[in-house]
Image (cartoon, rainbow, N blue to C red; front, side, top):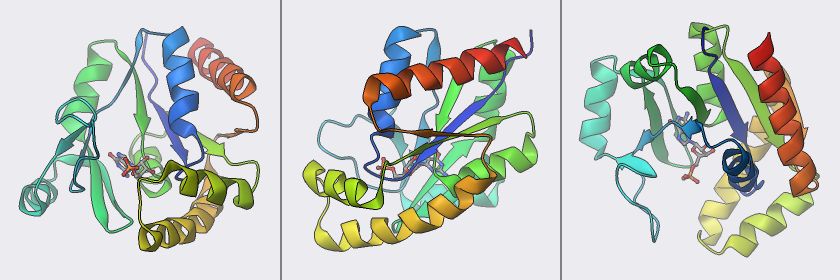
Length: 186
Ligand code: 5GP
């Protein structure tokens, strides 16, 4: 059976990570793709587990050598998915999910039209801002930058295949499960 690539995006602080975690707990055969980034690790993050943390030079080198399926700049840092890694996972029959920003997701869709794009949306912009501040991992300037990005992400999400509103965690997890399992049957 041909495996489908699922791409999940959502604004920062929307709880996309929690929805995904809920889905992965119930469907442990799915794996999250590990991205490359130039941002510094947050407390508790491990190289090769959460991300491959690259220097700016290393990241640029991957761009120059066309190693990325997609890459994007987000809030001053670069993030990218290695093409070879994804092709290998799909060839090995792995159920793989990319958790990337909307710009990257649209690049993936261009190259792999069969990829399924899912956007996790906040119930409202106010709720999103509150969550972002509650997380207390970013300073004010970074929060402002990210809120600006949110509006652009909501625009780009118009071109996604599915939109799931994270108003209630359990409901959002079930909806995500229905979308993914439904798509796998197609
Ligand atoms: P964070 O710094 O909070 O881990 O991630 C910031 C943003 O980068 C999130 O929206 C996340 O989905 C996105 N991101 C993570 N990995 C990738 C990637 O490989 N490519 C792209 N385009 N975005 C990514």
